[in-house]
Image (cartoon, rainbow, N blue to C red; front, top):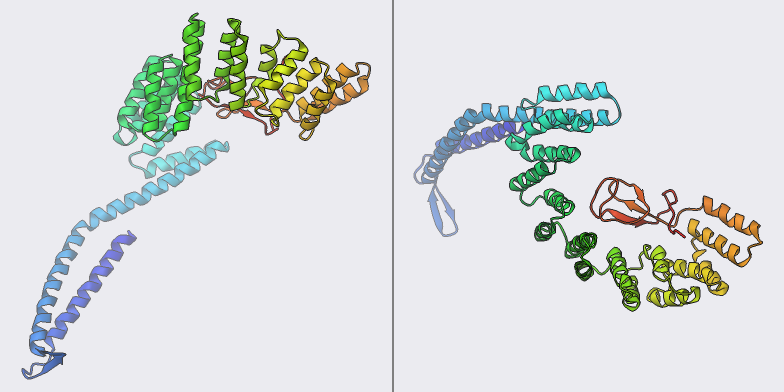
Length: 444
């Protein structure tokens, strides 16, 4: 509205200026001998006034035509601007409705939604809100109808497809889900969300070649960096290895694990699985070398329970000696001191155990106090007072860390490719912020 009146004002000012030019031309002096000298040029005022009058007449004609054109378009512009204002107010009402819904003010949320629908003649935002609200409330049948209606409208087609995908995932209708994901990519070929969902679907369906193709698409579109795409390729190969292992294909399992570590040598679980393969064939040297290279790449907390299990066939003294060699690439890492403290206690190497645990005491955690209690109990079994004191401190200390899903924030005892709670892909990471409740790191 405001823009329309400003354009009219500028047009009127231009007409006034043109009229002034006409007036100047009309009232200019009529004497033919009146001249103006400018440098080496002599201009007759009457001739100049005639030229100015011609220019002014042209300008007036142009602006009059523009004025009539503006008047002709004015109703359409005013209607469009009024519609934009109503749409803006409808958006404000929907935002208030969402806010009220999240705070539990259901009456306010409903009234604002109704007001938004009255302001927006298309009702598109109200339909989106209602479909999402039905889905969140668990009314999947009605939500499906709403999302299907959105899918049939050009402006909200992708939103409708995305909503239907969410419904199908809740219903575990995998074949319909595949069709919808392909439809979503037809509508928006470079959608990183749709590609990620298709990758997730292919991996869970054990369609690894298709998954690799999607990873390449994500990298080409810039949704994944080279490091991220290599990580995803490594996880895909790791899942292939697990499938081969389950099918009894040992050589296939080994080949896929090598492929996984070639794509991302920091994938600890691939390292541990490959070491298990070698250990199953009594190839202890290869198993130790694999663990040593893996730890050198990434001193992951998953090695804390894993290394003692791989060395259980050795004597306690040899377990400590071999572990010390395997973790020598990171002598100052916290994982190194935890592993060597436990093995030193088992080997009754009190000096080494006290050395490593004293370094851990710089940041005492639940596990630190538990190790102190184990050391005291092993070295001085009669000194129950100190053991109880360390265990008391352990009960009130922060945990060493937990495996935490970054999607649903659920804690887990171990890492996995898919979160057991929300099924999110590659979202479980080690969290040592100390804010979570304690979880057992080591067993036995």
